[in-house]
Amino acid sequence: MIWDLHCHFSGFGGRTPEEGMAEVIRLGDRMGIERFCIYLGFGREENPSPAQMRTHNDEVLRALDHWRHRAWAFVYLNPNYLDESLREFDRCVKDGPMVGVKLWVAQKASGRALDPIIERAAAMQAVIFQHTWWKTGGNLSGESTPLDVVELAKRHPKTPIICGHTGGNWELGIRAVRGQTNLSVDLAGSDPTNGFVEMAVRELGAERIIWGSDAGGRSLGSQLAKVQGSTVPEAAKKLMLGENLKRMMMPILTAKGFRV
Image 1 (cartoon, rainbow, N blue to C red):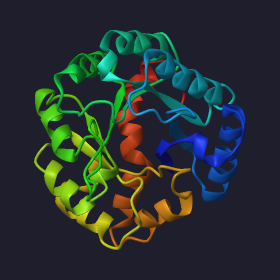
Image 2: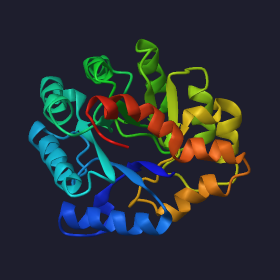
Image 3: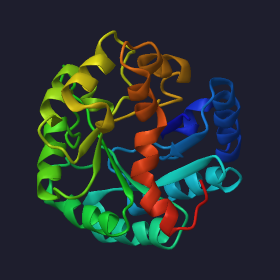
Image 4: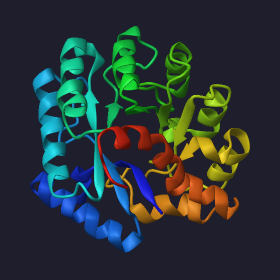
């Protein structure tokens, strides 16, 4: 069972969300991937307006429409427009088919404006995914590092949160989140470097690690190789490749009546 936490149909080619998603499924079938979590549309605005945010989510809803037996979607929100984000959450998650929240680079995760979003998502047991990175040349002004997500997680200690990309610089990211047990890490995006998965399992435990590809920004094969080529036990690989994500998602999937 392989579930991809982190997928963007916009990187797969195609002029429309429907065409892009069809290519996701075609290539996913070749790699044995059963389910995909998708978010973000075709744009990449760092601080999207409410209208842009809605456009992103509408594109994802279009991509999802024909593939609800293979994919789920997360709503893309911008904490700089908090009221509009909460309304968009209600439109797409509370009253719509989406099952999680995607937060990117508009505001650091340590900012208090994220708290109402986290509380709204937690009330529905929606999955919460926060992009993080540690850039050698310096992050974008609103871009979170794993330390920012640790601050957020400390304010919401009973809410599961995913630290996207493990911070890119995974050796620092793993150490940063190690003591915050409501944080899981996402393996997506960085190069499939030897030792990444082994260190994560050793320091965090396999139960806190979730596989994602960040495709089409990265290839499905290179990202699967991180786990499948690692030297950890097979039981740990199964947890990372699908079982952990399924466990995290089941409360909201059950509440929404999705059959898995």
